Length: 101
Image 1 (cartoon, rainbow, N blue to C red):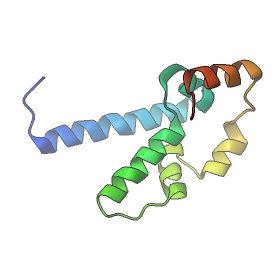
Image 2: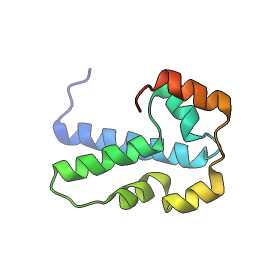
Image 3: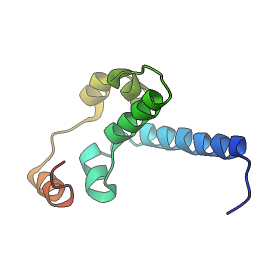
């Protein structure tokens, strides 16, 4: 691993995160349940992690604000525009790969 100063490392990590969000926004066809089934996380997880990081730093970013940051729009708008109902195969795969979630 390259020897990076903390500020540079943070800048690179932030750039990678912004690129991930941009990629996910351009791939709105990819459903959260499919992400959960394949990778074990989804856009909602990212927004929760963002909110938790803010809370750890004493910042008050609520759930909806964090979701808006991750989804690039209010969550309910994204759901209405892009989310489809999960089919039985997706639900079964989710139950198997994410027990207790």
